[in-house]
Length: 90
Image (tube, rainbow, N blue to C red):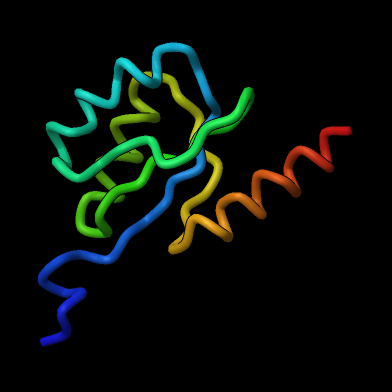
């Protein structure tokens, strides 16, 4: 068994940043206790979680009306995706 299987691989979910997202992190932590907002800007935010809970967290976010963009395995790639999204908007 690989160590990451016991600890859990990280996943970074890119979502649209809304004012209530910071308050909702407590609700998200009921699903995954290690979840947190890893990065945020004006328009986008990145929610960090373990891979076991990714689908449940995405389902919860969509249920309450927060748009999810994509999921990636590294924060570096998540920031690159956000940068590309901002360039497309201009």
